[in-house]
Length: 540
Image 1 (tube, rainbow, N blue to C red):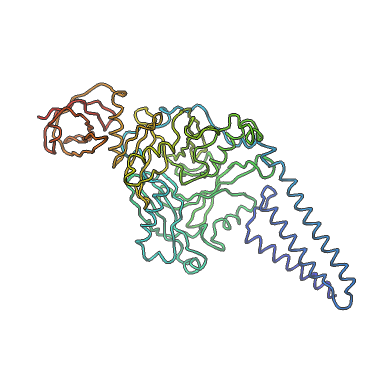
Image 2 (cartoon, helix red, strand yellow):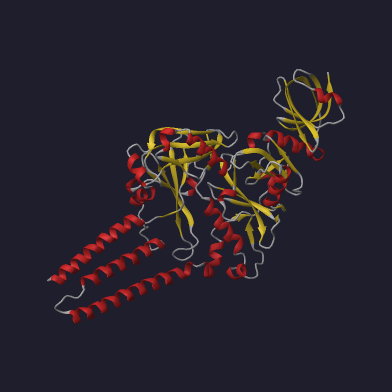
């Protein structure tokens, strides 16, 4: 009778352990989830341990109990071995060594990219973002530091996604609970808001919500995002969630659902998306093609870059990647999200990174642009200097200041492929901006503002992009100058005219005495709707 009591207790303890582990690990209840197999193995081992204790010897039948103990131990060891062997066996068809072709085909990369067609030409300084993730973090932390009422309980998440919102572009990051005990103290109040950073002006602000965020990856118990999702979608395997806001500023978590294409676990692809209202917890599922237009990040950086590495790494199979490396390519920034640059086009967010061959370190053979909402990836065959070379070139221009170059993005300036980057101090604040020619990275323009840099860069290449000239007359309304390579460049606007005129003419002595209010007559080469290069100037 006592033995059956012990066995009943062992069964009860096993049930409690299974429930507790399910709550703690939150495995997807699917054989296509590796965590589910791990969960089953752990619960089985717990069960074996509890029943082993239940079969422990007593003072009246030690020998018999020892024999039982040995048998139970052997059964437990055999069960563990069988489960681990089964797990290894079902995992084999998912391994890259056997299924390299399936991994390669997990993403499609189009080779018909046309730089001048697909990358919009720079028309104004608002076409080039200057705030990358590192700078956004610094600005966000400073903003949070001014909000004393929140400092003791909350912190800003470190990942700032680039989003399109109400006709402009921002980097956004949610506030998080500062830890378990801070969650306990603040769970009734919820999370008060999120941080928005303007990618053009570097202005950061804390947006306080009328209704707080209740569901978050930093919460606990039922308010933990994945645990909340697991109640409705018990068998789904989720990808990395992304924080965004809709057109009304309502916070959402965008959670991709993945399914394997190689065996039970391998070469996962996103098959659908779950939108979670972070305030109410309401969820809705949709196909990737049907997500709302305001969603910018269905796919995470890690997801895109991992599949790009499969695509270019397994061109001729697994062993070629290990040994011969024939036709193997790689990204210039391998799995370093702080070095990726994003841009927006037609309200979609794009990831840029260069592509280089496995054996070349100083040059790119092309680059890719990945749409983070649709997953569409295009490859552009545009050989040129690698980003690190362009960064070194720009840093060399201002080496006396000790500034370092931020992540690089490729911009289109009048059809010229050009690297853009910011130059920062040790506080991660943008001090200058740089434009470096992709074909010849020794051509580096460094200025205080994007407008100045674009104007100087265009002046540098004005002989190559001349168009019909025009005559303009008027009164100088705005005027400033900058010294570049020992020469003074002048930038001015005329009254009633939004065009920025750029002049680097050195044969006109009177130009040095120009001031606001002077009347001038200039012959110019229009570069865009709001910028022109001055060919000649007359003081009236």
